[in-house]
Image 1 (tube, one colour):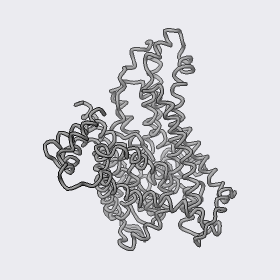
Image 2: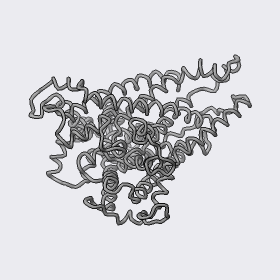
Image 3: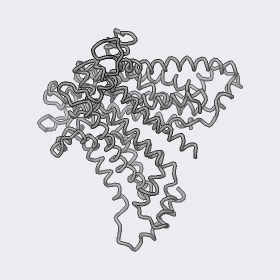
Image 4: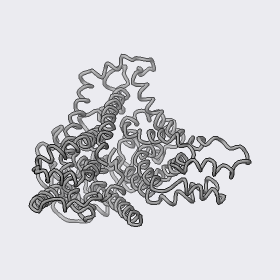
Length: 288
Length: 288
């Protein structure tokens, strides 16, 4: 950024003396205006309506409805599904990432797996539920898993299909950051493979691993399309119940149910993402 | 939420070659482990796709037969009570184009401008662009209801979804563009252009933007794949895009083979797009 100082003095003469120009921040107004209308305003509506009655009066007591056993059930469902799918995805994804990263860095296998992971991490949506339905569902090509429609097992398996690739993408840089010299040093000192992972590699990767797990957790938390296509009759998790609440007015009276649930989700994601950011900073200390 | 690492950047090769640091025996064991892992994960990722392919090649009436009817039906399928499949494919592709265009017009000039003239806003812009990661689509849509009521007074077209799709695409597009922007010397380029008499418009559109072609392509592809897979917002605002259409077809006629041909076609399309970016990214690094 040493050049930055020359910009100010160097560029000025070319427009000095012309009509007085607006301050430079004016150029960012369209961007901020757009985000204000389509991101900040809707979020504000959610937060405000969560503590209002449907008739518009303030009612902060609505927040206590988050403790309602019915509402709590959806949050517990969400938590179960996210925890299971993020842990499974993280462990399996880390194994796959290690297998890929320990090969030739320019090899075909690595290029293929990274490219395919990029695609599969983006799958999800209703199409993923179709794919599993014809693989292990009632008409499954492979076999018919009797637990396919059991919550959370069937849907967890479907979620791992996009969680594993996401883990590969976010965890691979951490594995690449392990320096070969650390391995050599521990081998020269007579450490076994297990001792290396227990005392050197494992502790170094742990913050990155936990951070990635939290990212997977948040990823699963906001997913809605797949589970809706998997089972649309019963609501197990918060997004499904938001959907039900939006399309019908049944449920808790004099509470904006959808807004309240949405607020609960924002809080949950915010906690998870803060943890992610903190762990990422911790992980960056060694792995660069 | 998926694929936080932008795809073009992912396969960065680690600087240190891994193999030489390890003893031969350990290396052999590692290789066995790697190929076992590759086979198992390969099957896990491939089998659902193969099942979809098999079901897309099934004659609509008889099970266990082969036919390409389902692939022909993509152009002609018409479910009862829902728009024709082809029209929702068209809408989705148009949405992808509009969303990409608006995203680029909104983001590219703003990011370049901030880098050049209003650096004190850089952190704010980054925060706002990454904010949609913590506000899931299912939350955003709750607040958007009110805003879309106003939009629907002007136009009822499903194309109006682009307003919020730009917001959903922001985090991915921002990361891709930011990577491209840091890779070039924006200050020097703009000083050179300005001292030759170029206007700020020329600097941004004709000098800097062409220098970040790969990043722009990356942002466009990530945005496109997001729009092609979007379900939550369209479904809850009662619009019909490709994913909602597939969902409705599956509710009417479970296992309609056209579902699987369309699913596979969409997946292959996204895969090709992402492969193009992966290739473009490699070429850029090859030059550097």
